[in-house]
Length: 184
Image 1 (spheres, one colour):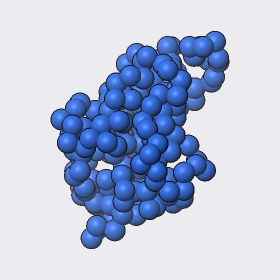
Image 2 (cartoon, rainbow, N blue to C red):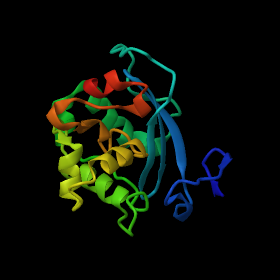
Image 3 (cartoon, rainbow, N blue to C red):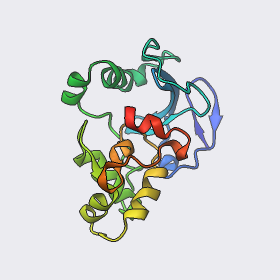
């Protein structure tokens, strides 16, 4: 069990979280909904869009940390640039993903996440098959899709920029917000 700042306790079952003791959790609002974020001193563990909010994009909603948590500052700044100043975002370093999330044993899923995180820049697209080939498993396009579905760090590991052959976007957020994938 890890102690979260603010005195709350939570069992962190996600891969790698057992190795990180100082976890901060917070929420960041954005035009597409509220992002739930968890991070330790080594990097981000979770960036997920809360389900059931904002069926449409609302550009009037500002990007801001709803918990006023200082460890979230860079993640908040990056998200603000992503949604409001894409040119600036392209020159910013991605928020660091905790190395325990990117699995030192390099499972297939971790290889996919690492490739997308380190090689797929803002605004760039790749097909599931291209990603599979890049990580050494050219016939594993469907497995890339599964890795995208399991991605704990949405936007930062940009699963929304992996598409079907021919550019069809495929699913996003478990198929519940496919239209959002095109907007992101």
